Image (tube, rainbow, N blue to C red; front, side, top):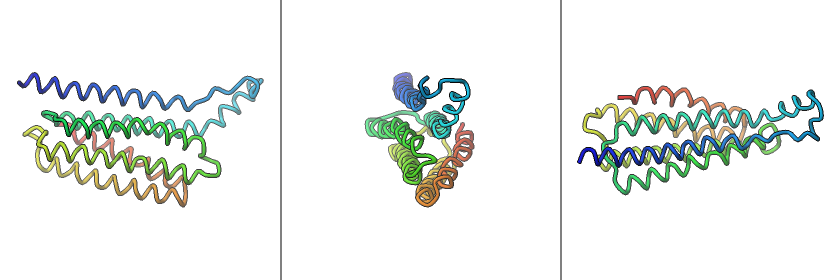
Amino acid sequence: MTETVERETGRVEAFSDGVFAIAITLLVLEFKVPHRSAAPNDAALWASLAQLWPSFVAFTGSFIAILIMWISHHGLFRMVHRVDTPFLYVNGFMLLMVTFVPFPTAVLAEYLGHPGERAAAAFYCGTFVLVSTTYQLWWWTACRRRLLKTNVPPEHIARIWKSYRFGFVVYVAAALLAFWHAALGLGLCLSLWFYWALLSRRTEA
C-alpha cells in the first residue's frame, strides 16, 4: 500500500516537473535574432542586441520566478503523503497558471521602456497574484484533505500559511504600484525572489 501511494505522488510530481520544464523553456522564444538586413555589420549587430534589453529583463525575471516556484513545489511535495482527485485538479489549476507566465513575460518584453509599459507591468505582476492564489489553494487542499505527512509540525504549516498571505499582499501591492510606476512595481514584485528562496529552504524537512 505504501509503495502504491508513493508511486501516485511520484507520478503527480513527475508530471508537474514536466510542465514546469516546458514553461521555463518557452520563455526563451521571446528572443528574436536580428535580421542581417537590420544589422549589416558588427556595430549594428551589437546595437540590435542591446535593444533586446527588455527581453533580457523579462526573461531573467520570469526564469528565476518559475525556478523558485518549481523549488517551492518540490519542497511542498516532500510533505505530501498521498493525493486524491480534488488535489489533482487543484495541482492542475496551479500548473495552468505556471504555463501562462510566458505570455505576460512576452507582453512585458514588448512594452517595457515604451508607452504602455505600466499596463504591461501591472499585467505581469497581476499574473503572480493569481499564481500566489493557486499556491494558497494547493496548500489549503493538502491541509484540508489531510494529505500531509503526520510528522509535519503544526507551526510549520502555520508558517507556510503566513508566508503565502504575505506574498499575496505584496503581489497585489506590486500590481497596483505598477499602474503608477512600472519599474517600482516590477521591483517590488521581483523582490519576492529572495523571500520565496528563503522560504523554500525553510520548508525542507
